[in-house]
Image 1: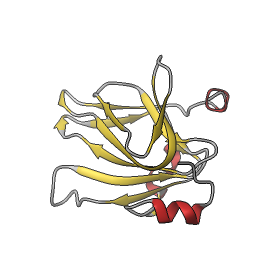
Image 2: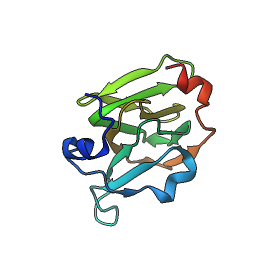
Image 3: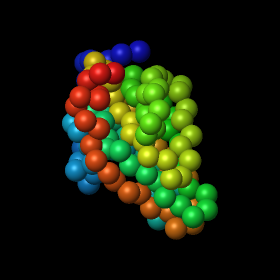
Image 4: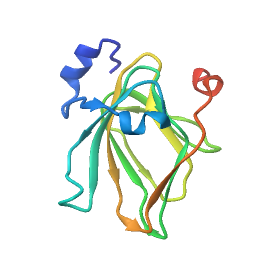
Length: 144
């Protein structure tokens, strides 16, 4: 379901929109919000609800790991996109699940006309790290 109104979206987002995602703002086009759902100092599985305003998307990026690793997205509200480098974009709605293996260049974010949230689960791995790359071009994004 699409949500243009932020207040209506917040009512639909079961985990809450959270705070402005200032720590990672350099890796997003538009405004995103982050609500940590696990405490990384207490458990090894990082889970956060990431919310995107309409038109917001993160840069291309890769989750590196020599063993294990990657990312899982569980979409919770609104409508968005996921795309792997060289592949067609995939529409995301509440209930969509995306398993992203390590070493796969990809991006994800909201559609132009809807807020969007997903749970981001960082899969534990050996030598795990994230590499943030170039923004998704406006030309490519607006063609969706």
